[in-house]
Amino acid sequence: MEQTHYYQVKVNWKKDRKGTVSSNVLHAPVEVATPPEFPQGIPGIWSPEHLLIAAVNSCLMTTFLAIAENSKFEFLNFESNAVGKLEKIEGKFMISEITLSPVVSVKYEKDKEKATRLLEKSEAVCLISNSIKSKIILEPHIRFLFAEEEVIF
Image (cartoon, rainbow, N blue to C red; front, side, top):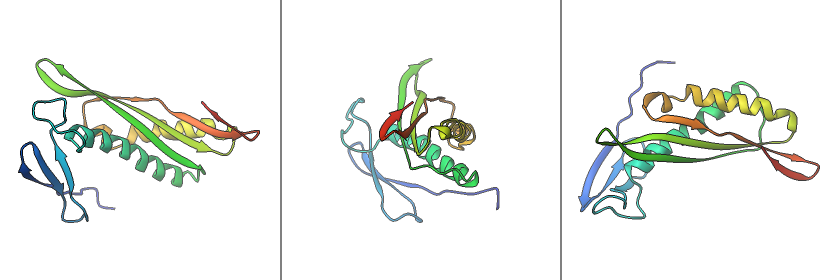
């Protein structure tokens, strides 16, 4: 596999503090706007801040899926919540940290340790996390069925 790839994204301003993000290799454009926390921000529309957090969170998922497949690790479900902390540091706004809270569902308790290891490895090698200077905090949870009852760690 070639080691260099390029991803082209285009942004078009529409009006006010709103525009669209698109790519010639993707089907649907995404509407983007200044978030409502800022002057003239617009609620209910994806912001650059949301897209950054989504990129880190979805990278964790896709990396986990690849590592789990390569490890022949069977799981039932993957979901992850991510929260980005925006703050002003040295006079500049930045996403200073992103907390990832993935939940992997497995059949058996014996799979808990391996699932946790694979999540930790996934976060460590995620190319998006490795491309930004925000602190990444991983809070993994493993869910499994035990005696007909769901248990979360």
